[in-house]
Length: 419
Image (cartoon, rainbow, N blue to C red; front, side, top):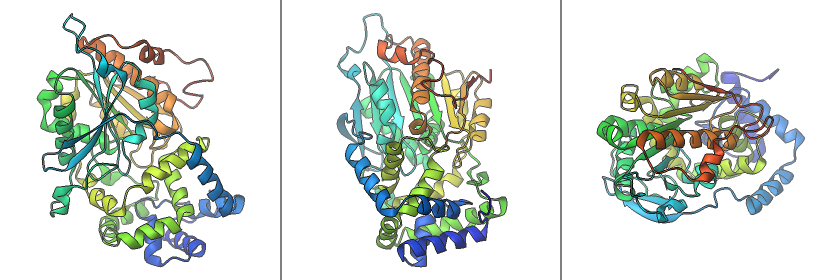
């Protein structure tokens, strides 16, 4: 954007804009911006303030909150104890649970387990839950410290968080609610890392039971190379100071949470920039994403942020070779750039690589028709691979090619098959 500040000038401009808007302290401004700083953000804030009044924005948010159905779908609740005793919140959804375990031929139904991303919860799979629940067995769960799950007991006892621990949590969920039959594992962002951690720790599970895997907006390593859309020098500086800053802010929960509320206009701009790649997203979906992110306390943000730099699971991808795999990413994803998805697909011959042109990190919310269709196609391949019971007609209907100009829309990139 012409005239947009960069580097240190961006930081100063963001601080000035935020302070003028809400009267909060400098420490509070940092609390708003940490983890989501981007070049040009200050200019975006200024434009939004000029074009839409604050009162109008608040009224629009209230109306969206009252009318939007996103995140309203619920399944049968359960709690599962993680290896350290942390209570994980799980929901079993889909009408397939009422069906027999087999059709008499030895075939068993698929069970699909969804793993959400960092600072989100299971409701981020709203569109997939709605599209796939007819006749399917679906498992949704909140990762430790997120959503309705308990705050990590081991972290509260002084142990650092880690992606490997999340892999153990996923194994506990599978053992408790889906101990038999073929599995399809779906992970977005940190949830994809969780699936890779499971593969690293339990490769036999992938050989014996996993029939398909979807890795959406995620990466297998090299997090420290992600620029977050910043200039190279700014990205290097941010990556250097961010872990300590986040840790400090995690100890100032009351101050930071109050600041997030006061600076809601500014945080909304940041959230949108790092969640979506295009401007033509349903306002209700944008607001829904804001609510999911706002619901994650700053101390949970601080708990998990440091673990991404230690995540290196390229070798664990070996457990996925030969399986039906979907790798889906938005080409404007600033948090887990699509180049990382391409790198994973190169290590998985036969994987379906789908790049959603112009979409951002929350691709399953920004392009739900595309995500739903690609997941349905994966389920069809997985059912064939595992010899599972036939998929219901409602899911098979999703696999049909959309009519021109509809469904995935004109900005959806065709599937690229690296094989």
